[in-house]
Image 1 (cartoon, rainbow, N blue to C red):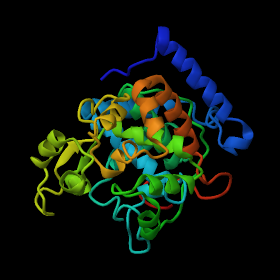
Image 2 (cartoon, one colour):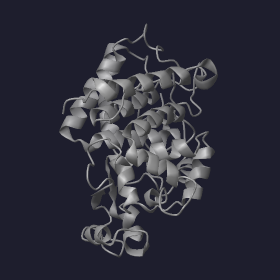
Image 3 (tube, rainbow, N blue to C red):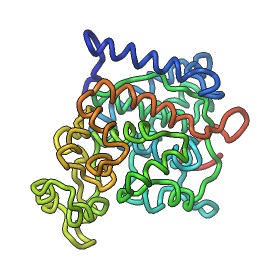
Image 4 (tube, rainbow, N blue to C red):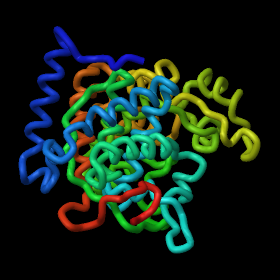
Length: 329
């Protein structure tokens, strides 16, 4: 799959607007010690190596772009963007991978491992797993037709984490709009950031276990849509728990604003998705705006991704540069 580019006409104008937004967000007060040029002298090939690895992964399986993006979100929301989500459990560490929101759900670890190996071959002991994940998430979005942006870098890797932190910090697919707003606010992200980041669900898929309650119990759902989803997801937990359905019923491997248009028609797959529209709540108008204006969504998504990427990074002498993303040095 070739990487779609923003070239010409409205797309070029949107790219200019996005880059202007990035520049504003990179003011010292906003981004602390992270910098888009952090590795310009120590690992100038970083971006091209990550891009190559992600291109191969997405060509092999387009869904992987969404999987890596989700890994980054789940990393940042638990103790900050520190690569802790990549740590395997061991005799001395019970980490995030088997927490309720992550077990049998998060994927793409082997893609990050492969990219890390190539980066370390070019620049030994220089680039953190946390930064590789941040760049890979950006590239996954762009390779599926979404925007691109300059990623602030300089994160270091956590040496430890806990399963409890993941269980308590990650929002549930059954969350209400109020709960989502509160959860994101606790990370320094406002309601617009929350709705924009939820647009990541324009790509990827969800397991039956995460949308079963919605398709059998919710009333704010298109009846025909619910019927179709019930064909792959039985009413009782068990054999169909792992069956997948696209988060965006119409363009699940294309990063666009279709997710929001679906919500206007009550086609949200997760309860938390549909909470963004239809109840007359404070985020309905944002969802409507994004449904009608893909450029506004893309620009706000970039803004929110940069803000999320700046949640409590380890910098300077804090943390470490892991040799293996799956375990501390």
